[in-house]
Length: 403
Image (cartoon, rainbow, N blue to C red; front, side, top):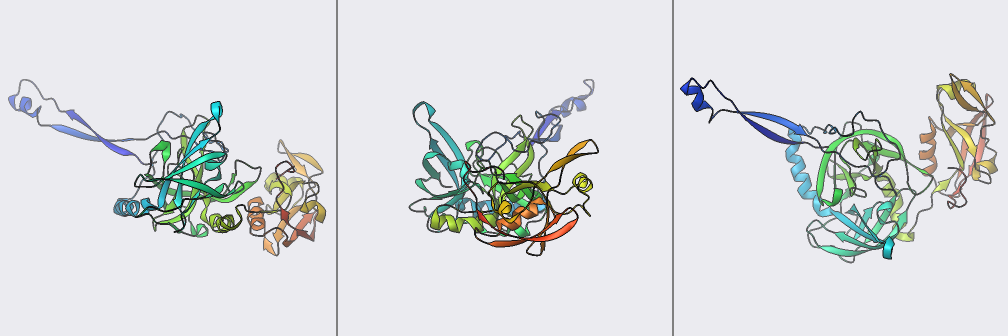
C-alpha cells in the first residue's frame, strides 16, 4: 500500500557558552523523512472482513510495507486518476428489514454508455436497494440486471449517466505479467475515489467464489491496497485498461492487510457480462470431479511417471464424469509421513491440450459450455485411455456433493 512522507523537525542545540551556537538554535533544523504505513482489513467474497486464504504475519500491528512507485510514473498516475475517476463509482446497499436491516458499500465501474455498471456479486447480494454514487457526488438509483455468484460478478443499471462520466476500457488479463504496475480505485472504508498503487504479485491464482463451493481460476494477485469497500472496483494497468475486478484480500485472521489482494480477471468479465446483460444469469459447464494437482507424494503413491496432471480424488455421483466412467480414489497410502489418496484417475490432457495441474483443468473446462463434449486423456494404473465426457450445467447447491 502507498506510504505518505512526514517530515520530523528537530532543533540542533549548540553549546550555551558560544554566542554563535546560541543563534543557530533558532535557525538550524534537521529534516528526517519517515514512512508510515496503514493497516488494512480483509475482504472475502460474500463474507466481508474474512479471508479464504489467510497468510502469516509476525506482527499484525506493524505497518505493511508499501509498494514503491518509480518517480517517473508519478506524473502518469496523476493523469490516469483524472482520466479514470469519471468511470468509477461508489455503491451503497441497503439489505434486510426491521431489526435485521443493514447497510453495505462497495465499488464498481461503468461498462457502457447505456448505464451498465460492473461490481461484485457479494456487494449486492440480498440487496433491497442499491444507490450508485458517481465521482462528482451525483447519486442514482440502480437496478440489478444480472448476477453470477460463481464468478462473483454482477451488473447494475442506472437510467442515465451524469454528464462527464464514461465507460472504462477493458484490457486482456492473459497479457498481465508479474511485476507489472497496477492501480486500484474505489471506495475503501467509505472513502470514495481513493487510489492505491502496486504491482502484480502473481497470476493464475485460484480463489474461492465465496457464495458457492466452486473456485475462480486465473485470479490476479496484487500488493496494491484493497480494503473493505474496494470490492467490485477495477484493477487497472498504466494504460488505463481494466485488467481485473477487485474482490478479496488475504489476512492473518486479525483483519490486518498482508498486502495480498486478489482480482477476478477481466477476461472472465468479457465472458460472463454479455450473457448477464441478455439473460440475467450465466450457466457454467460442469465436469463433476474434485481433486488436486499431482505433487511428489501423489506421484510416488500412485506410481506416476511425473508430477503432471489433475488427480481425481472424488467423482460426483450422477455427474458427467461419473456417467463417462471416470474414477476417484479407492484408498490411501502413507508417503513421507503424509496420508496420500491412491487409485484415482489422472487427467493429463483435454482435447489434446496438456493439463499440467488441477488449475489448468478448471480453466479448460470453464472455456466450454454445457452440452459440449470433451475428450479426456486419462492415466489409470499405469495405462492411458481416452474418455469422452458430455459437460452439463452446474447443479444447484442443494444438489451439489463435491466441486
